[in-house]
Image (cartoon, rainbow, N blue to C red):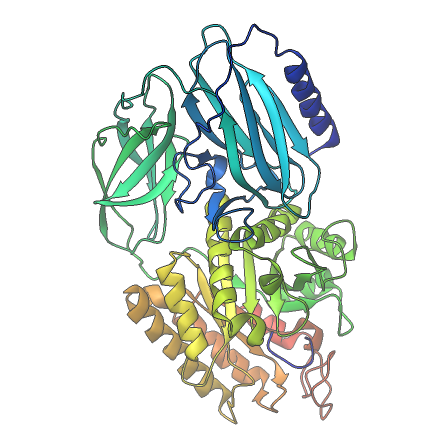
Length: 560
């Protein structure tokens, strides 16, 4: 919040290493002589795209830093359930020895060939070269080489990959068969899910390209995909083409036309979630407050960097195994849930410390995986994140990645405001969310410390209406849809600027929020939801006369 107060397993790994060693030891044949020529396509990713490489989970991307040579490299944003395996299939000659090498950087990075040899390195902080050789079988005419990371070990990078040896006999000019039976398997107001039957190829299909009209919008290795960032109540026509390692592309599949759902003013997401900060302000018992007020959700503050791109509570406490996890477990046992707040006004934040959107998404994924989250909130503030175009875009792209990789996850972004709506930086954030197809669910403003003066209700409403108008003009939404993507996060009692939000005023704000069916209502903070009339702006009380947990009780009445 914007305030000066506060701001998978070793056995599996060993098994893989053992099989790799066996593959190397078992590579016996009477090989032909490999000619020293790199037969990979786009080996240094200098084309600026992955093609003809394909990556599992859609977790691979081309980045401009860090690189080993040239101006581009591959980044694989591994998760706890996907090693971000990026591969390329190509024609080879039977009974021939090939030399595979590549430069990699990151924790536990592997280089190898499907069904054959592989090698790995543990955790180089700079680019390190991996090399391995393999021999093709007596009738083998294709090989798939790969690079991948390891579960939950963070983003890896690869560059200048080489497969030295003779290409397969003749040139592959046969395109894959046409993908069959393209169909829609689901839709929302902003996304369409598609599936199709696999194509066949004389060598092998390496990717499927999804088109909306004449524009390619996605490339995936499997036979399903979700296209997001679409407008509500809009008709979209999709086709799919298959591609092989030689770059041969099939004809387009059958076309499918899908109309996204109406916005209807309802994203299906409603959340009353006041802030609870376990590292400050005499934190109360979360379950006792739940019992007293009926609140079900808390926004838990704050996830920061513990050094580099590593998330931790307050940048100090571990994600799992500590008091924070114990409190979250107790909240869930009592029928509630939490959304973590990542960032805030002060402290060492992940946005500037993670070098790429993929790396930042990896950090977010660690938080998501630690608790099996339904939603995350990025509280983007101050000059290091909010007023920094590079970091703004990095955060939006990271949220886009985690949303694509975690079906059903809701993404919230929280930022400051003026009394009439978003600032220049707030407007830019919204415009970039649209331009980058980040598919943010809720834009939450913080209407306090903004010169609100005596009329905190009127100025909060005006600020929210300004946000609504900006969302309408940027996304083309109607009023109801725009409201359904809005959150309000206030400050109970006295703010740092001595703005006064009384229980009566907060009740007015809640009732307005309900009548306009916004998505989210929060305040800073439950720690302060206690009386201390004349007590000023302190960490464990509101500075005004009130009853214990009165603002939390009011917030619990938010239904959207």
